[in-house]
Length: 91
Image 1 (tube, rainbow, N blue to C red):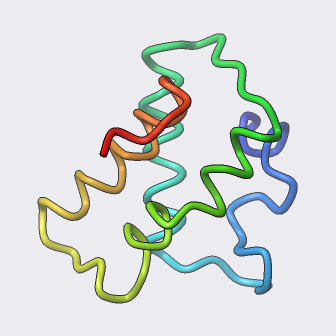
Image 2: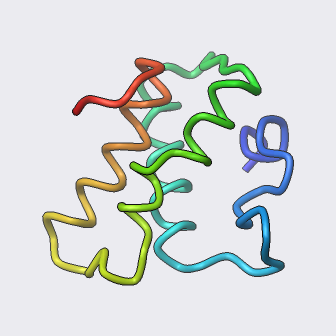
């Protein structure tokens, strides 16, 4: 949570809302946790966070059609993790 507080201006919230969709929270919280486990001193820029939060990838991973089937859950969590560790999306 400290990482989110330090690096995400609005925390888990979407830029235009005062609440956080469950799939967004899940993708970010678990993906960040996994990235921090691999790299405890993870350092990201504001530009990297903005790129993640405004990406079509995150939108695709967290929209209502991002069902709760196992493959999609793992895809969104690992997508956030991998982006934070590598600074780019693995298309």
